[in-house]
Image (cartoon, rainbow, N blue to C red; front, top):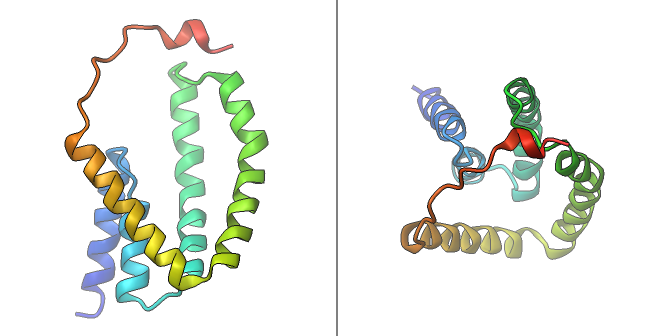
Length: 131
């Protein structure tokens, strides 16, 4: 029975991630609340789990010509720099403040999703911007 909660957390993370809603939040909550993993370690594990999913997503989107390569190149160049700065800042803040900021961010994000009016989807063609 000790396997049930990790199994459900994994399935829920995968389903939510597959829907494009950020399954990492579920994984972080499981790791910190149920597995007694320190916040910084849980965030690092979450990022490691994200890498293969991101690569597969990039390959699928590229196959369907849905990638704006100029934008992707900028993210690939500056993303690691931002990750290093975030890692340093998270270590500087400490685990207690970091977990409170994470909880506050989740709350703000959920309120935005509940009350934000959606704009109609644009009809622009991604192929004309793939660079």
